[in-house]
Image (cartoon, rainbow, N blue to C red; front, side, top):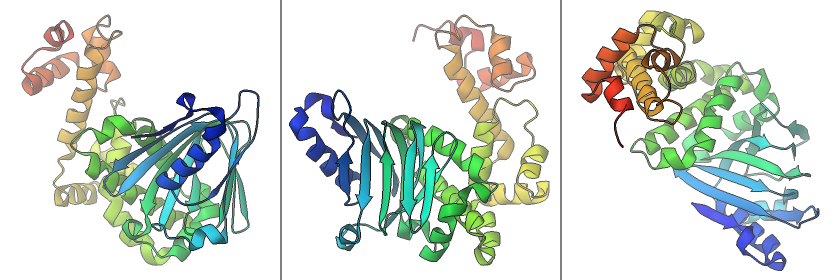
Length: 315
């Protein structure tokens, strides 16, 4: 959902519109414009994914300040996990100061005062989770704030959020939007417990989120022909037996999940402008299939057409 596009507004109205949109999408705060040539410009979207939401902002330079007075105003208690798609952010909360850029994740406790600024402008991507959905004590969340990078899950969650936030509109239109939101909340929860060093919860969270982490891992390594149950289990420090048991309890056939995801990627690739010019074998290899003949058989069984027929179809 598009919340704000200042290109259609008079310059004198843009700062107030930015403030109102920010409050609607997130929590009450003070918005300060950092003037540059061309004035304030911003585009903001909010996309629900189940109980959570993706909040994306692309804007010229600004600074947000959430004060104790803002905290006292009524709002849904939330936690946000964010990153900079472009530009450099400067974040401070409870004595923790962080420069946010590139591969960094930023954890914001929206129930407490904080400040965030992007002096030269840029793009911010944020996954917002209601506190009751996260189901973690706030002291665990607060301990995790300065320690996200210490968790081995940081890179996995950062890569997952990159896909979720930048393709939010596409995912929200799919039938599995709520399930994706739930899985992402579980990944965020696992990251926070890991970063906080919360030994009381870590074993239970690892067990509860294993299948969600496996799904995210598979999505990231789909093109790897060596993606097997053994390599997936090793990446998550569990036995193959435990991996199969967790997938079975979740109603997931691991091998079929991998094959289906690869076939879906191949089906989209074959009818893309570049894919129509590429050989079937090259597309198969790019989607993780080592054997083009096996790929062709599985593709026809799944979709009723050969890869060549689908590639040449007039869609």
